[in-house]
Image: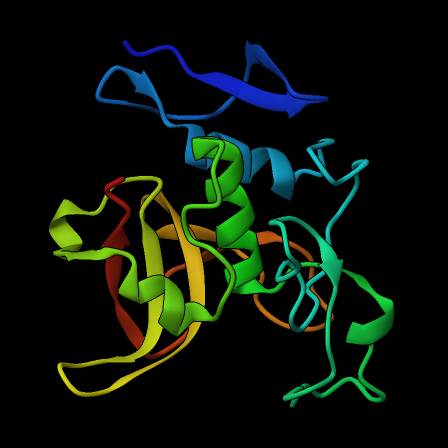
Length: 187
């Protein structure tokens, strides 16, 4: 029976403790472990700890990690727009930061979900494994219009920054009706 362990990155140190992160192929799935640590509010690089709020445009500063958001392009239901005065992450900002912490390099880079899809390889749903990214919207040969991304954690679930008024959380991949597919970084 595979043992489960939990990883926390604190002040640049790797700390292992008993917990709930899955082992994939005998290797620690750092992406899922880091996403789970962020979801429960563990201290990380650029975050002192605690719940991280969804912020439109959050996580898109010069470096990956929580940041103030922007009200440019904001269409959320909470008025006035809270993004410019709230430090946090949007969905692609979360994916970018988790991958930066896991790979120790900003492999997804700044940009939108469309920009991230272009840097990844699409995989069949049956081949999806924890740590892959789940995108929503339309991805076709001539049309790329995605609007959401989550970090797949297995069993039909993902960790994501869903919308204004929420914090980083786990949802079923079916929470949104327009699943565009699963994608993998191969660096």
